[in-house]
Length: 247
Image (cartoon, rainbow, N blue to C red; front, side, top):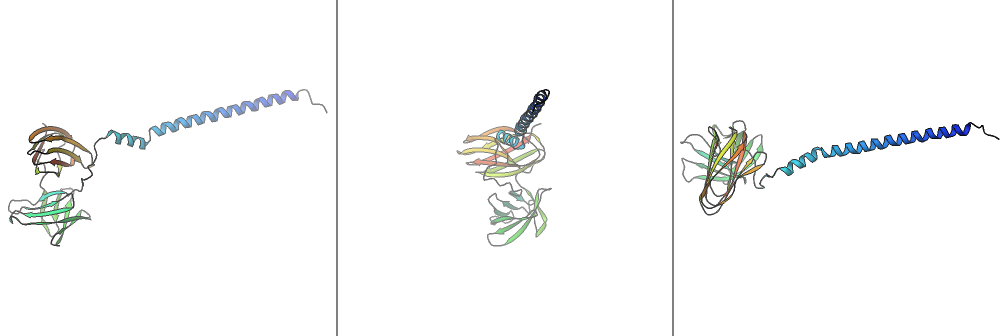
């Protein structure tokens, strides 16, 4: 049996076309894989997780482990000199009630959150009472004496200024309604260390005073936005902190 002379040429031509098609497909697939890999690399470098990690690594301010950011923690007092009832909600879950018209009389106890901005105070005597917090006004009231409103005693500001005083280590909450550059004057009496931090409601903090030893006065500035803050003081004696918005 004989084969026509033109068939080998046609077979060779067909084989060449097939090879060319295979090569083209391979090139396309290779290019696609490379583009996908490059796209994958680009996506990975701009991923939210990577951005979050970068943001966290660039922030050196962290929340102190002992600091509780509950909004009512602090010392509250009813208005007027004649009826100066005062209740302190401690960061450790303790309370103390005092009365200016009954010197030496106080009631210690504990408080727990009950939901809907309500808190149950249990005196050491076993007597329980419910206190209600109003976030918008930043006040609390005793449910059985709703006519008396308690305001934050330390940390309330007037005309863009705040004033704090204490003895030893404590945390004092305060509210800033006049944002801007604040100038703080820090005084300390005693021989121990004096360290002062400001922590915002998100848990970030900045040092007003890294560390001072003994009696002295230090002035520092810090830019504060509107919101709630916590003055975190470590001291070995009496101290005062006064702040005001720079004009």
